[in-house]
Image (tube, rainbow over all chains, first blue to last red; front, side):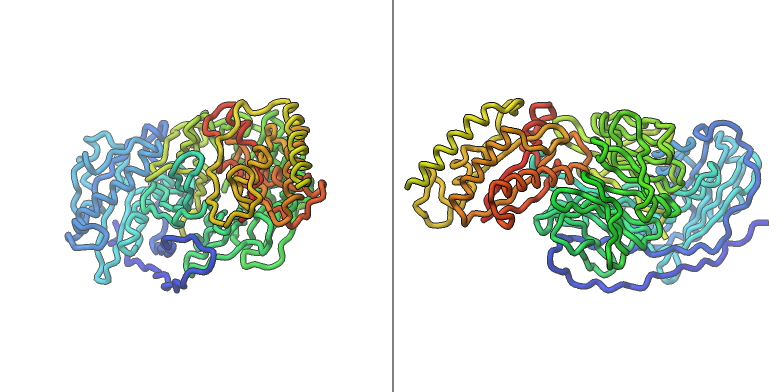
Length: 463
Length: 171
């Protein structure tokens, strides 16, 4: 017996106050706040899947999401019927663009009716050699918000494998599609979700000798793109806070490179360190309570930790040379960082208090920009001798090179630790673009961005 | 104007020294755009440029306001020392001038490391100038990492031109 659609609740983010810009700002556009979405329905039913074989060969039919009545909505000029097709397209694109399964999209499938979402017409789908079926619906509520349901069926078993539902404001309709793609991906692969997430990066325009670099953000699929800074000052190396409420990045807005913490809700922007010295390489701790930054004093760069709310900074490294960056292990106990104390860029581990510093990279090449996987089992880094992206175990072993561009650098992990983004620079022209590759080294693809792009920073699953 | 003669002699001497540099860039970077000369003439012209401008400084030091580094290095070699001595002579003559040393790296490095490396190179130049007797508060530093290359290709020759520290007159 299939339950009727559950009544779903959503939490509306309290509108936060947008205060006027402070001095030394270069901010053009306020980014969206990350309003939480609440799910009331339990995760899907368990049970075995009939399909045996490689998941990349698994056929998944994703017809348009159905609607109970074609109602107007702020999310789509064509009403909820057109929105249903667009939602299915988001799910289809997420899976197809990441090389996951063999999805078939709504453009080449019959449109199921509203009643068929909970009671699929099995014959329709068995005839299309689809092993799996994603059924979805969208309804517009009286308050304008949208209720979106997502069901995953095993066609051979004629059985429901998973279901979930969400209530979203119209502006967040794509998030419901990403949540559905995450549900399908997680149920079939056993991995954690990653589609419902955002990326901060640097948008690049202009000639090689005078590039204009702007802080920008987008959803994991490139949608909802926004420029945050106006480009009058060079912006570099952004990082989303784990709760998506703040962005740290480097700006030359006062002519010197310094790390700023930008509070998205209040528009307030503060220096990470009240110092005349240049600061680089901002990083959040996994719990968002601490930040790491690197500061050069008299030309000597070391790594510091300071509470995210401000206060006394603690110096974590103390060697002559460049100690820079830092990426926490998921539970926050250790930090992997980069140092040239041995004479060339290498990767080191230390405890979160700076004790126990030891080198882990011994491959005979330079190790730079180490980033700890959210799963904890791998560290991604830039091979700064060959300029490829590679991964290694936290002890420095099992090195695997994943990319082969002329110059690839700055890996950043998907929230589930299965996919890595980085940026690739072209020889001579200096043009840069964002790329993505999975941990097998397969499914490498360029991410669509409005202009050239570098310094990607992938945030966690949205709250 | 005995002092000017002394300066000229110093400049000539360091120009000879700089000829000994082991691996000079294949070609020098293009001339920077001259700073607009809005101030009134002080009478201390070098060529057509006015004292207090970048053009005046560069003319006086014969283009040796830039020093170059080997890959990943930040040490001051003999050619760098000669250039910095020339800069120091100018700054000792014109005590009202302050400079910023801009440190740069080539594109064959990761972004954040190159920012730190540029800062290290700028400080190498600054510390050498302080060692020659210049006051610390007349010399600021800023790193541009690999963000502002002056040679735009992707060859060893262009990278050699971009691994540099540039002294710029503060207006």
